[in-house]
Length: 176
Image (cartoon, rainbow, N blue to C red):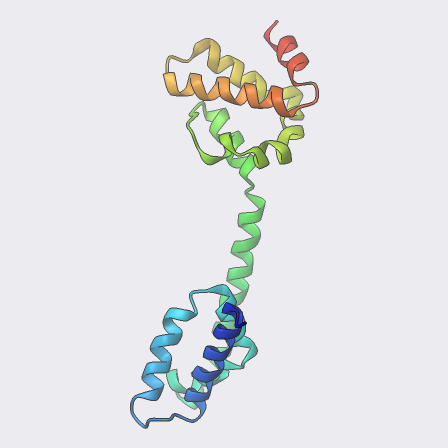
């Protein structure tokens, strides 16, 4: 049985072969480049393309031989930039986004509120700063007139009670 990965690998290899030794003098390379422009949007295909040394095949087609070195500095810079962006995305966790939303008092049905994995993964972070996030929820319940914020705050408190081992006790203590 042929998998999607096998098909992708075969297609990438065939496109690289067309870049090396075109089967048609005027159509093969433009066709291969158009296909690659679409396929390389997928991370798995990009990885297969790099493994097949496809980048080296493209360089002579898009730049004169004298600028191949600068094209290599550019590719490296783009790769470093991509790695940096991935790191920043990881640092800005879903809990950071959630905390920012709560502290600003703009509670809305963002995906985190209803995601059980979010609550399981982050429930102990609610203990930070003497349960600051919980106290803000209670303040929102006491002061807000926004029906959506009130419903979301109630729901979040119910999630805290459900997922935190001492959730009910902590909420009872926070209210008093």
